[in-house]
Image (cartoon, rainbow, N blue to C red):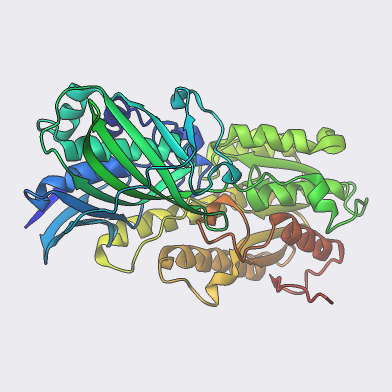
Amino acid sequence: MTGTVRFTDADVAAFASASGDHNPLHVDPAFARSTPFGRTVVHGALAAITVLPRLGDVNGARFLFREAVFTDEPYRIDRGEGRVSLSGRGQAALKATPRLGRLRPPPSTGPTALLHDPTTRTTPRMHREITPGVVLTGSYEPRWDDLAAVAGRPVGTADLALAFAGYASGMLLPGRDGVLAEIDLRVHAPSPPRHALGYRLHVEDHDPRSGLTTSSAILTAGGSPLAELRLCSFAGRRAPQPTLDRVARHLRPGSGLSGHTVLVVGCSRGFGAALTLALLSQGATVHGTYAASPRAAVQLALHSGPHSSRLWLHQADATDPAAMRNVLTAAGDLTGVVLNATPPLHPITLSPDAATEARRHTDLAIAAAMVPLGCALPALTRGWVAFVSTEALAAPPAQWPHYVAAKAAIEGLAAWLEHNRPDVDAVVLRLPAMRTELTNTPVGHLDARTPEEVAARVVRRMLDQDWATTCWSFPEEATIR
């Protein structure tokens, strides 16, 4: 049995209102753009409620969330072999299976922490606050009629419990940076009475390294249990904004680039921000562009400190020729250009269903390099262009075929420039994995390096005038222990 579904922004807004899950990852586009997802994400609980009827008349179910679900994209619902899946971009985003047996009840003892209205919480819960044994209790007040409208059917206990699961993960534990990984649900009363709902949420385990929190919960009505749940959620770590102090740990301030003017396309976060600060620390004047991250741009300006008079920030989409021409007019003659802008990276599989997303990603990546390059070339005489690429080209991750295809195309542009404009030095920067939002997954940060370290090494090679080497790589430097 197969069906299709396409979620809309209106669906997400309606579910946020009905469930009380106003996590900014779902409802705040500016916040979502600063995460690895690059845009707002459909609530996992909404996706689970959508596929729930395909499971049939069951007393419980287990939902595994494998990938993010986005609005305005087609998803296929398949039922077979005792489970239901929601798939898009050539891979399963959600798998649901009927649950057999009972969940182990949560412990009846432990410290209790009563919370104020969690929707007023604007900061993420710190990892040190999430400790095994902590119990949160409170009332849950969904909008029943609105939830029925979202579900397209009368509200059952399973619908309420799934809505609560999203609320618990996104608004309570872990809170703002919470992303659901699993819901294990057992229903006690299929038809819920319209009584006041209460909950008891017990933290069973928390891994600070991965950010994985495992909790058990009981949802009650009038004091009687409606459902038991086991929740697994990842508490995302926000990649810290680069700072001059952290750059200085790897590159002493100097004046070797005084009189140089550099355009950094994609400057506001991650490696772009670190490189901007590293260039400023060596005396360069930097014109930086950003498309949709004004908060990060403000932070970059603040972190530029004593070099702020040499930093010029421009909000401009790198794929927009008119916007980039305006930036180049303001910048004047250039010494160098760094092509760093790239679209958000969403995992896909190499399949026909993923071709549309792969083409979209590759088209945007090429345009984000070709448009600024085309606009800047007239202002570059005896200058240089740095094309930001990745060492992943040497060992492509399974779910990044579109990313490595786009970076290979960027390196092709560098080869074109080297051959057709010998008066301009072209260099490819094959960067290692870094602690940036582009790949800030629960385990992706564990072996990644800081963008300040990598940016410092790039600028050192610029200071050394290493333009004869057309592809720069940055293996980890050996240390003596």
